[in-house]
Image (cartoon, rainbow, N blue to C red; front, side, top):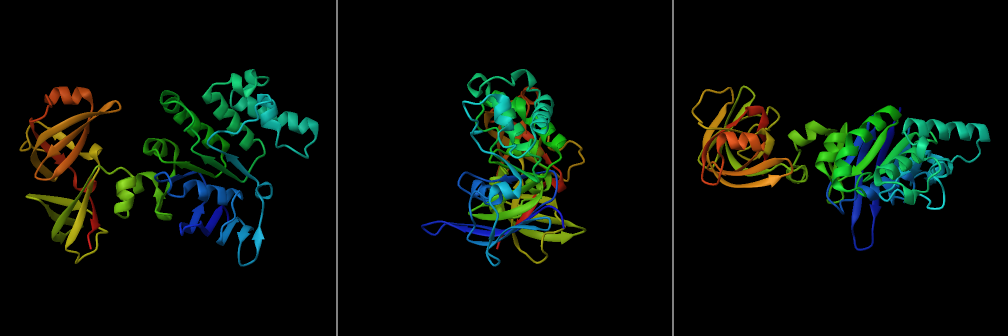
Length: 361
């Protein structure tokens, strides 16, 4: 058995409890995703050995890191994990090279020097080796913290909001760079974030945490496109979640009524016999056209009226009334071509696989 396995509970005064059932991290980058206060950092610290769970078991491969039943608790240095906290925690009195080499105790001087030099070269820090942290930019500090974590050749890499200390333009610039670095490292990685864009850019797997419990685990796209419950849909940023009545099943399709509009969903896993549902639609999956009656491959076509438009980064979020409240995302050029403004009538197209249904019981 390879990789990380964890089943644990961490209780806090006042009754709060973080519960994890059968978490598995084998390879790539797994994102712990959820709102602030959900328990992401607590879980990360339990994996690192910085906090002791109240119950459960944590293992990596054939090595047990924690077991209440067996009274085992390995400290961080015996787990061989690399840990990067939110604030990077660089030693202000040590140079870049000194920070990176700080944890290499017990190695011969030549081996220590070789490892530090290799990581400096890999992360393009060689020219900064003699600088102190206060002379570094935020992005440079982030690379130093990552270098210090990987130079010890850990079994598992743990990153707590690694880009949160940076300003927005720097975060955006460093996302792809950090992803490339993590892939090059080739070490199983667990990364905490509450930012959906960051999760999409950095993660292979997503572990959604809410209300102190793991709600869903799976590939990032699978979790975002097919949330397991309303909590995940809300956390994942599904813009439209509305109640509907189920009309019929057939050929892997489910027909539902939302207000006065019939929608067809390609949702083969929706349980037969359930009469009520929640319709979940991501804004980027809603296409707008000048005329809803124009021929199109999408099964779902209906008219709507624009209610409001607001900026959403480089895109525009369009609020619609199509017999039920609906949101779409457009580029400014697409909005200009459609002459979108409040009160404008438009056609809405949504493909059946892009309408996700949750049972409403």
